[in-house]
Length: 77
Image 1 (cartoon, rainbow, N blue to C red):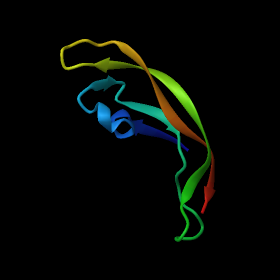
Image 2 (cartoon, rainbow, N blue to C red):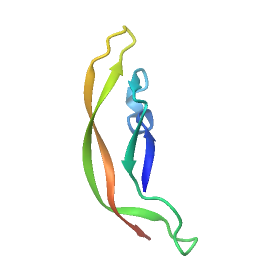
Image 3 (cartoon, one colour):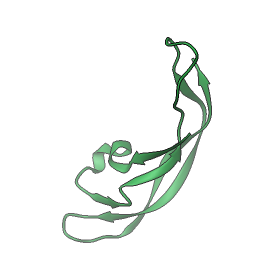
Image 4 (cartoon, rainbow, N blue to C red):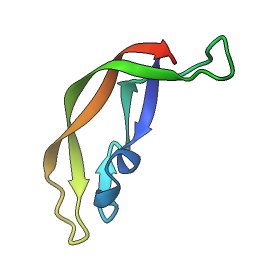
């Protein structure tokens, strides 16, 4: 399931910076399972690297590469 993920949620220690884009599109597990006691969870993941603009408090704005986890395979557990 493709989801928009907030960069700051993924990297809470970078909260003093502004990122552009502020959200990235990633494959993530989600949705409903047939039983309320089960959750859709990743059983296989991979890392994707994206270039983002990292705006610092002093106004500097370099492009940085950031690694995000994508879910490749999901299961209800």
